[in-house]
Length: 381
Image (cartoon, rainbow, N blue to C red; front, side):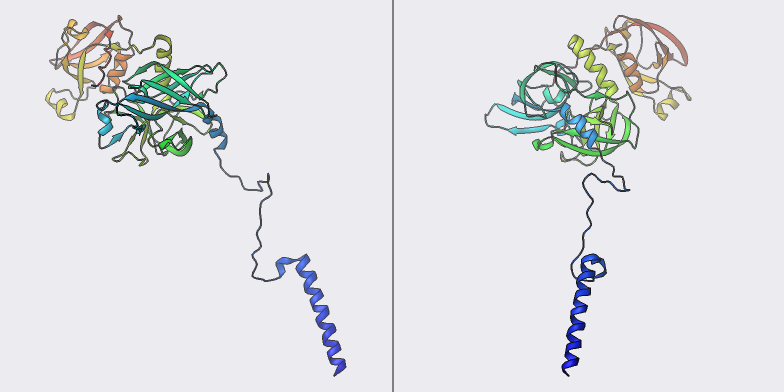
């Protein structure tokens, strides 16, 4: 019996020793209740590549600023602020400490090293004071260089030397449906924020937001405070200025609109050079040619726009253009719709004489018109 217990003790000791060795050298062979975690070493990516837009975000964020404005409280200045579908997304009223003062929030984009900032007209239109907060925490007063209500763009400037971070402009009209984009701004005053989405559509118009519309539509989340911020591609290059969202309650529903960089650049350059934007004008109101109108005028497949009104004393009136004429081309450029007509005329230099090709009483005629200067829209009361 004593011999049996001696053998049992020796066997148990040897077994425990073997288990200890196996557990030390091959822990995976032991089935226990402890889960073994495998972690990637810092700096090691293994065989898997992870998509990241960190480089693009880090490139653009220093050039996006927060714009704080203070103004006297007046009647609503923009009829679209209460539109049930469209909302301009800057902070309607962040503070109301004084009965006659209100503070609002928007965003802007540094476009030059000496402090020119591109933003939205509706962010600064009623501002008595403008303060800009940079991504590095610095705050400075800004002043308006000029603005263009008809594209909802404005240029303001800060004076902090010639070494400020400036955004890189993307190629004009490079945005395509399906492209990944980043929206950078300061939504709800929570601080600089980057959101991601895709280009949902391009050349959106007839929305009733601006006189000149050619929006990039995106589903990147943009909210109150993003107005005037940057819409950039995956390389951090500017492709648009965020301007409005489609929303019944002011929050993001995945439909946002940005002014393309091709338009923003032209407007910005004119404002910096002259303080305003000059456009051509002939003094007519037009409407689209619907199938019903085409049938009543017996137009067939002719493309153009119907002149519904001629401004008395305007360039078209002096050229004997009449309401009911079909405008087919301007300066040799065929017209497809009212948008193309508006853009074609606006691009002409005031004082230049051009030919209008018209269809009147089933007969094509040509008249000479001297381009006038498009009147500036009257500010809303």
